[in-house]
Amino acid sequence: MSVAEIANAAGVFPNQVTYHFGSKDSLLVHAAFLGLLHDARRIERIGRQAPDAAAFRRNIARAVLAMPSLPSVTRALAAGISRPELASVVDQHLQLLFRQSERFVSQLIDSRGWRTRRPLNVEARTFWSTALGAVLLVRAGAHGTADDLDLAGALTIHDEPDPGDVAGTRRSM
Image 1 (cartoon, rainbow, N blue to C red):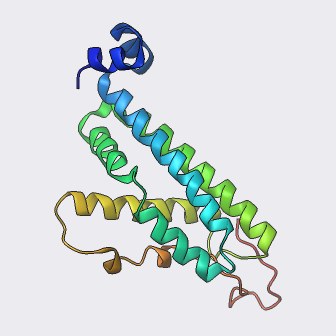
Image 2 (spheres, rainbow, N blue to C red; image 1 turned 180 degrees about the vertical axis):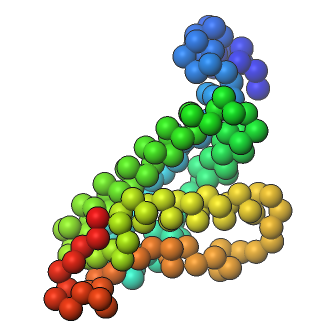
């Protein structure tokens, strides 16, 4: 699809697309991450419905691996690798995803009395890196199924106290 076709579909001039986004590839990175951020909001609803931390981990992992935006985001990541001028665009969107995820998990564990076994920023980055890495591997030709990946195991959110916390009051941040 050309910039002219994209602009026509949006009802704007092609130079408006390139002025705002810089290039068609940059527009595609923005669009891919916008889809991911919208999917992440839907995933949050699934997480809020979980009755306990184990169900939260299981439900979030299953839902994230089924997100329709993941293939386009992996293409955006590949574009960021192959085109250095897109790296900052990819990084900005990843930072937003991580902050949104940290904020959601922080609110959830505060309201439920759950705990994490590592800082929330590490929790969010580890989880999303695992999910995105799994999709990149599959798109690169690695064989396997969702059963071959323990994405839920990448989360350390628990409703029981940390074994090193006798009083059960420590909350990692």
